[in-house]
Length: 489
Ligand code: C2O
Ligand code: CU
View 1 (cartoon, rainbow, N blue to C red):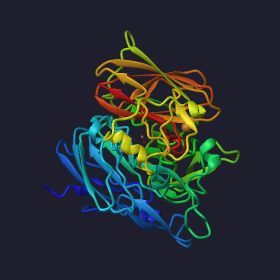
View 2 (tube, rainbow, N blue to C red):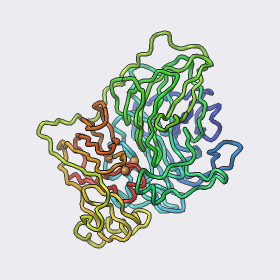
View 3 (spheres, protein in one colour):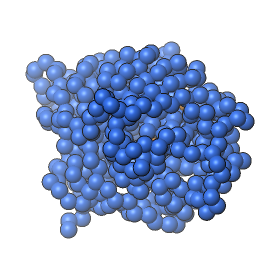
View 4 (cartoon, rainbow, N blue to C red):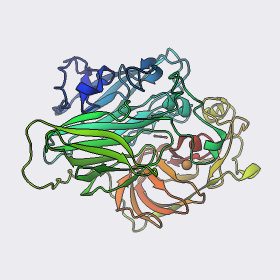
């Protein structure tokens, strides 16, 4: 078999030439021409073997002339990128060289529960020095990511995350296809070391923000795009905290997929973009020598996240009119006859949090509660009055709901707090049907931003058994109580 370990393509940075060596990890494969991402020729079928080694590595996040930082990554490059074709199966050899246990959750992939990567819930934690094999066939095309699921504020805070792209949804070729990972880092800018990843104030409010904002692990990088071309940019918010509002200046842009799920193209002006969310856009690249910018418009002073420079001969003469992606393979929920669920996201109800009957001893969930990496030390938040127990609890909550395999569920998500919560459901891609506060198109997603006092209606088909986590992806909320699970039987 050809050494297809390959899968880690390396096209995170568009401007590889300017992005610097840190983003390059070309394995057994020709290097992409400067400024152009390598395109993947999708194998028709087969298995892709990938090795991921979580370890501490050094990276100059603040630039070549500034102090380096110690980051935790899965490979030589930050945000290792796995690309594969729809229908291909993945065999992942994972090795943990970190000083603490970890696991890999495949965010947004509709795969079997035993591959979902949640310590104690779907697998044992992978201890320092241990290996773990994951294998699955991602069923859907799109832009996904992967990350740990305990001590996430610290592990993700140090950069432990990767990108997965499942190809096969294009109906018209793009002139380039580039992943752009947005992540802030809690750095002491004098030393390159870390500030505390969490703060009491942040946990109780909107989270603790990073001090250094990056795109593909660089501060406001410049990327070269084929001048006048139609370029697919896959934006990923892999930050633990920041909810931005992304948009472009100096370039036309259209949204073509949300959390990897195709949607009929529509113009992107600004999109509220919370932790874990992804947005695929097509932009018309600037003319040769001209510039466009990816912006966060949320701050009082909009922030430039990346600058794009047109390079080469103009590619397109016709007007900007992005083609839709091919149809999604996510099952369409049939609302008629669906069962109803409701989830209320709120602050913790003091000592009254409804905790279940005590777990049997030997119950892996009970063990989880005693593991300080997986159990919160504080309880600030709840879902339906239950908080994911803190370290002082020896009891485990029951599932928030028990669902029947194959049935369709309509769920109302209600925000009873004055903060925004990016709510994520493991294992199922849901249809976002309506919001009482936000002007959202009907779309499929795995993470949805619940703004203050909002009520969002979603629907999904519970087509795989197991315990599936539901939580806020603002990590300090997740880790101080805003997490639970549903069980599908
Ligand atoms: Cu990215 Cu439990 O999630
Ligand atoms: Cu939250």
